[in-house]
Length: 88
Image 1 (tube, rainbow, N blue to C red):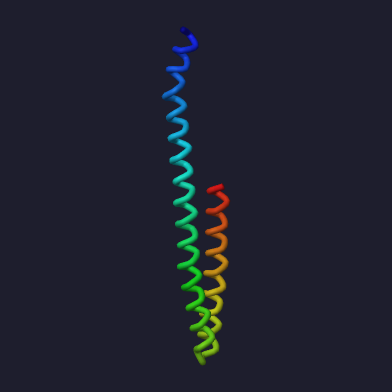
Image 2 (cartoon, one colour):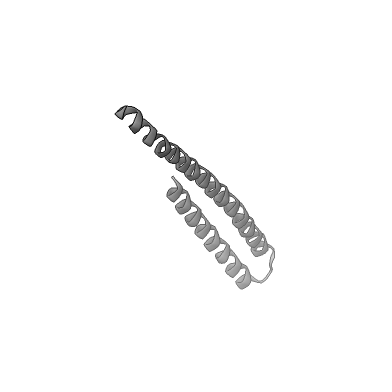
């Protein structure tokens, strides 16, 4: 009888544990999808900056835009990689 009583008490605890694991898994999946979308959008902006830098005839402006593009690319990689490490 004691075993049945413990099993009855453990069943809701086990169900809650399984439910929590599902929530964490869904959260990780959503986080990965967000990071992928952010990376894609940010790198599109960087590519636009790089194209703009190469198309302008004003040398100093080209240098500034190119530097900004490199900065944005590195910052995006850092942010996304850090986020992916935290999600693991």
